[in-house]
Image (cartoon, one colour):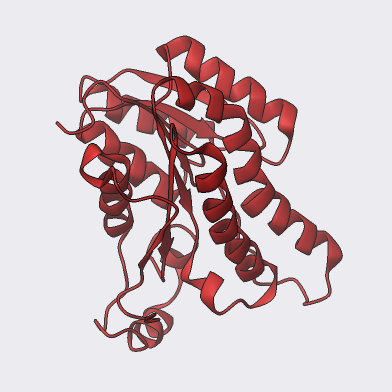
Length: 243
């Protein structure tokens, strides 16, 4: 397998997309550090499924917006599994009920979706540097048409990927993926009418699945993509096109 012998930390792995990413990396040979914040039961279930594949698993918890908790969870996972080759910076939150001028919601979205990724990269980069590792930041197509703090934070993630690539080169490769509307997690609860309306805005006339994102992450993290640096790959079915 192309990731055999690698150790990957997936943040937010108890969620819909994160769990599928973790499972995909494990199926390709990686041992997995599963990060969760509150959903321990889902993380344990994921760990059991990954263990059945013959992979080693470490469960770590923490709030990615708090530096001391991030440092503790990264060090715990690395200590248990013996190193780190891949950081999938996936943990994030969405909020579609707060008003445009809700300061607390604004701060929460930026703290988790942007600052959290910075903190995880900061804690992980020395371990990754030792093994010429990879960081994959999970952004969103919302970064290209920001609405409210979520899209602004994701635009910041794209900028973070660009900056980290320059900062950590040549020993750590940094890339990103920007999923469009993925029928998982929060989006998976939407009605069929809403899902169809979004699908009609894409060139492929369908919405994405978590597996679409997971396969892209696994490829970008693999040696097959070892000359891709600082780029963010859009996975949106053609919802936005760029020259």
